[in-house]
Length: 296
Ligand SMILES: *Cc1c(COP(=O)(O)O)cnc(C)c1O
Image 1 (cartoon, rainbow, N blue to C red):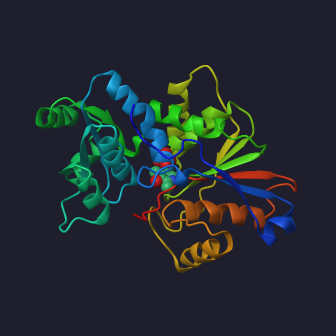
Image 2 (spheres, protein in one colour):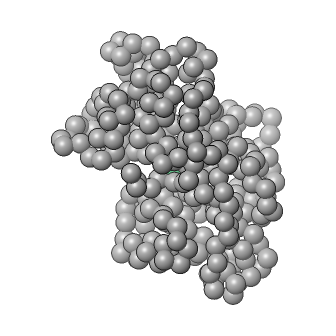
């Protein structure tokens, strides 16, 4: 499949900070954000096998769902274009013109945008709604919201299999939990996984992740993962002055960009856990930079 990407193997860098030295821990960052300028990080991992499967099933159209600021919508539009699929984005809520930068970019990739009011959108998984969409657009390969399905788990599991240095913990931001499920599956019970949900009230993620893992491989059950639910800063895409300042400090210290929706909350969480002696001295922590930057 022709998804021309700069490199599949994201580089790993070590972060230096007096705090890490004081606590005797080592922090590494896997730069999934550098995989591709538009289909960045985990969104590419999640789409990879979905696109292959769509080709195998001889589909020419991809249809997926998301909010008006969704990284997944953006990635599907860009990846669809690269891999020569027509794309349809079913967007939550009403159309607002002019389009915001996410939707304008998606449209510029050729994505057709279709809006569903919020209550219909909540029922998008029901056969009725899906049949209606197929009637309107013709046969499509349907990718769920956020891209989180079994193919996403498989794609994200490769993210950790590539890591070629020792580590004890792997940490990643969670939205729908598909990425974390992939990381858990990829580690096969070794090491420990910490997920930092960026939504408020993310208790549903325990079940969601368990369910994805079970569908992926029903014969094993992993217990080497945990979620830290208190780093959401008020909820999805909510920002606070101290988080903004943290992003600036992080950029200055490490020369790496992070953004407020996912990766800043992840690194805030990692710093906070380190400050609170959550990790034993000598612990090697691998943070996943899942991307999400909009610098194009
Ligand atoms: C979508 C996204 C996530 C969350 O991934 P899930 O699989 O939905 O948990 C994390 N980081 C970034 C940058 C994302 O765009």
